[in-house]
Length: 258
Image (cartoon, rainbow, N blue to C red; front, top):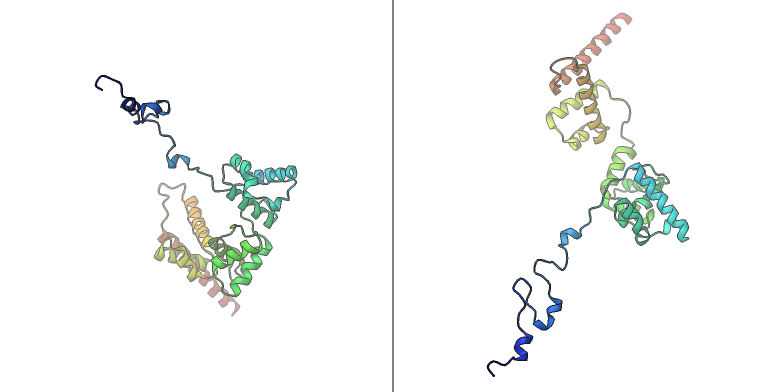
């Protein structure tokens, strides 16, 4: 009847407009529109530090060793769940910590970037069989790191190219090599892989470091001058002049002997 309160109408009457509409019966559960019940997904993403320095590697091993002793678990058998609190202290993920810990155990050293003898043996053996880098990394992880993804194909390739390849020349650079390097850099720029393919016995890292060294030495020689800019052409001319002097000295020495 008109004028009488209808219990069904009062049950479904809305709450004020700045709230999500719920029946009056559920007013105690009203949530303001401006309040998100859950934070955005982006805010839940944790940004972990990826690189390892000597101090953090030592701390990881120390904390893991202490946990191993206190929990009566062998350090080789620790899992991601065991490293949760350690990872929090180091601002890294448990998986990242476990990967680094397995690397430390396999190499037997806390030195960053160290490789173990078994890892190097697998690389040498696999390269002789013309295996792909991805396959080699998988073999190392299975046979040395208990299936944990410690090594990648890129790391294995760099290990071979920069350290294990018997054809790599690790000796001092000759003037002829310097001249060839400078001319190749002038032609190809920062295409280090292309340059290393032509030089063959020098690695990409060695090439980059040598070029940087040549430029820095020349800059130091010109530091007292107003114009200390170094051009590749100047370095090439300097090396060519050295070759001329070297040939003249060789000719002179031959004349004296005759």
